[in-house]
Length: 184
Image (tube, rainbow, N blue to C red; front, side, top):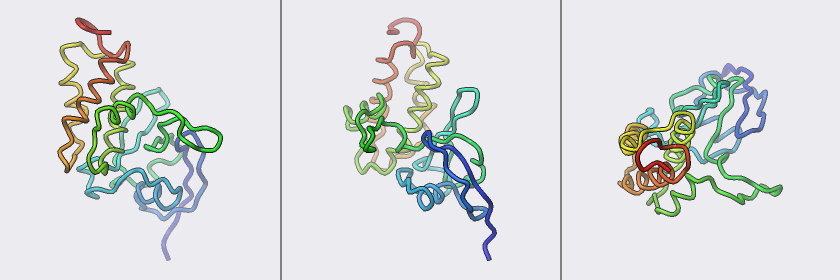
């Protein structure tokens, strides 16, 4: 018999659980199999590619990406999580009616080929933008900041240039994210 444990959390602004979930179940499997959120992708299964990342929102208003393929679902007990499905604004029917600036920039720059890694890049870029809202980056450090923030994300189709261009577009065009010479 498989041991289970109750699990409750908030995902994309909605309370989920308590659900009886096998102890040791990885978060990506919980998202896919228990709450039907399949946007996070299982890439490497070893925490290397970051296609699977979800956003963990902390009580202090900060956030971080967490690799769901190597993090157990019970780690998220009582926590607030955002998946790629939670970014766009939806109407009463559940239809997406507005995308975030990150999503819009990725479309504008056609920042994907197969799209498999895109959810991880969207979540990573979203966390970066939120961080820069609290701690703006110097204008001469924008590219370095983007590179260091996104360097763990792997794209097998080599779409990096377009992802970075889109993220730079969002960072440099959003008031308050860049300080110093050339800041908007």
